[in-house]
Length: 84
Image (cartoon, helix red, strand yellow):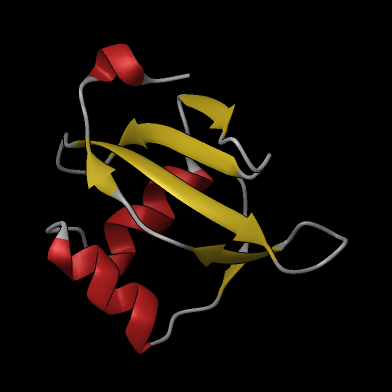
């Protein structure tokens, strides 16, 4: 399991909620990915299962050079075929 510090604010929490995803679910997938890809900007997208079996894609950015401070930009349920 990877360990990160996460930055949560109204903007990303509300965006997750629009997709029916909690911060706990998004964090779990980032820390326990079954696959990783990069988006067109080169930022990571974690793919994985929540503790309740939902398969999520969780795009995020690192906010520090040590790559330990994470800002989740969104998260959404997806098919396991789409994992990295």
